[in-house]
Image (cartoon, rainbow, N blue to C red; front, top):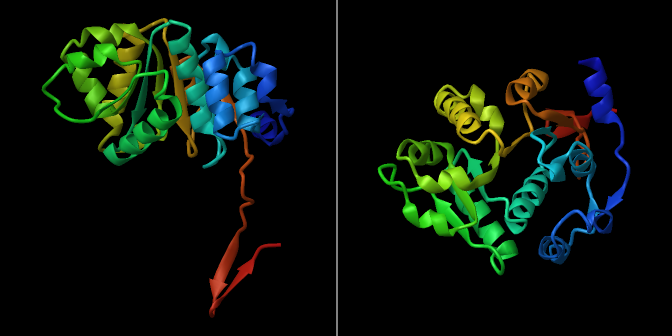
Amino acid sequence: MLQTILNSLASAAVMHMDQIKDKIHQKLHEAVAAAGVTELRPAQVKAVDAGLLDGKNLLVCTPTASGKTLIAELAAVSAILNHKGKAVYVVPLKALASEKFNDFRKRYGSFLKVALSIGDFDSSDPYLADYDLIICTAEKLDSLIRHHAPWVRMVAVVVIDEIHMLNDPGRGPTLEILITMLRQLLPKSQLIGLSATIGNPEELAAWLDAKLVIDAWRPVRLHQGVYREGAIHFKK
């Protein structure tokens, strides 16, 4: 555990997008560049080094706004453009699913078919067979699998956002069963778990058969302080 913490504090080497230009599809490189990304953040560098673009399972544990979503996008969109199969992005809440859908459609909609599936749990949604990147909740994907949606077997990358929800009393059991089913149904697919708060990352990574990516870098420095009598006294 101590070594993991030390590794997380170590600064990753700077990596510019042009350094992975030969590893990703030109359309993906252009879309990311158009979004203003010219240099990868530390967690993203570590993910690439850990096999992100080589189909390796990853568990990414980094602070909020440290670049986890782009890690997932690089794997998912690469798989689609390289004709490996579809990608599914799983989130815990419908509102978050809608947000991701709008973001991904804006960024990749010119060359990918992006779908949002969060509705009827009594349907296999056959129309999704025509889509490349599908955003849904864990409950919806669980329902699609149980309704034997044939296109599920064409999924090459599964992203589980907020994977720490495994500890949630309400949604946790469904998510755990879903991941178990996906690993049996799609043994060759790449699984990427994302979270900012996991208490047992090594144990979870082992269960997922995934490489662990931990980094403490955040875009805005975190300050600790105590509010007292109308003023905040920050820790020096």
